[in-house]
Length: 103
Image (tube, rainbow, N blue to C red; front, top):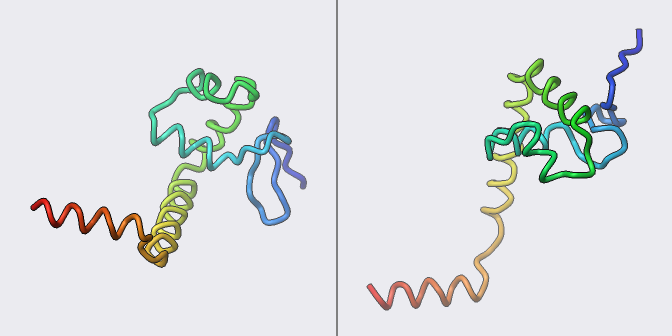
C-alpha cells in the first residue's frame, strides 16, 4: 500500500520534504522547536510556503515526535563532532591571545 501525504514527499533515502519546496520537514521542526515559532511565524520566515504546507509538516512532526527529536539530536551531535575537528583559525588564535593578555 502506498502512503500519500498531502504536501509532503519522501526522497530516495527516506527523508521527508515539503512538496518540491526544498525544505525538509526536519528543518522546519528544528526552527519550530528552537525559536518557539508557530505555523504563522514559520510562514512569516518562509513566505514561499503555504500555511497548509507548514501545518502538514508540523502535524507529521508531532505524529512522529520521538523519532524526529532523535534525528535532531543525532544531527546536532554530528555537527558538534565535525566542528571539533576543524583546527583553530589564525583569527581565533589571535583573539584568544588578546583575551589572555588582558586577564
